[in-house]
Image 1 (cartoon, rainbow, N blue to C red):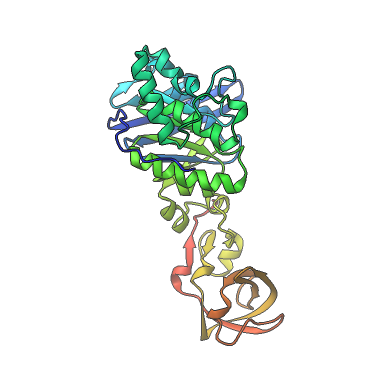
Image 2: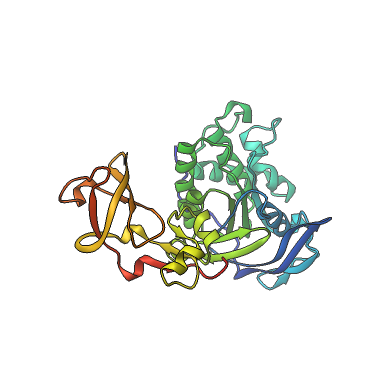
Length: 344
């Protein structure tokens, strides 16, 4: 059962949320270190980084649950420094769903509407609209414990969307689900947020989830935003070796080895741009690994002080898949080498 269309579901929109120089300390620990970030209206931004890098702390600052030690947060021109959480127009979806066990599905979805003083008839209509939106119509009287993990997460999303927030904050909302369901809900959530044109910040450590959901991805490390861009631009041009490695780009040539090849700093080698060429670089096959429809060849050449792994479809190799010790010639175009900077 999928998430529904956002047609007719109103949301409040403005221009942009600006985060400037936000710092947050816990004693000697600096969780946020001068964070700058823009959240445009109608766009989904993923905050991607490893555990402990400050993602959830930044989300709590935006929600008003914590105050920054330094820096400012503005929403459509309004300084939020002294605006309490309940007046920020923020909806939140949590990792553990945080549903109220004593309330049924309808009661959970209506919770924020009751807090805002909506009339009962308006609440009932909005709850019905939200449950239809997330594909849970007919489950109004179920209690959370009688729902699957995916259904509970849909209820949490409906509850967050019901009051028409100006900003939706999602704190690793899919991390407790299995991989298949996480992928399914990522696609559905991306479509829903696109239909709603709602400003959203999605916190995750999962690159695949971030790239599926977001228009823009902000990569975070040790309390700082280290690179922001589209999923395509991040993979095409990571700003340094750490970002490249975190994004799963494997063929990173360390600075010392890169210098032996005449480069000034560490490099990313885009092996997917290699093509068979009788006049190309001569490699010898050091290992062969079959991966479903693909074959991964570990290659060595006398010209480079490192091995490379090249993933290829067997049909692209006119002479067949080589074996251990065999020779293969490949064209390595100039744009296969991407600079990652010095001391990255």
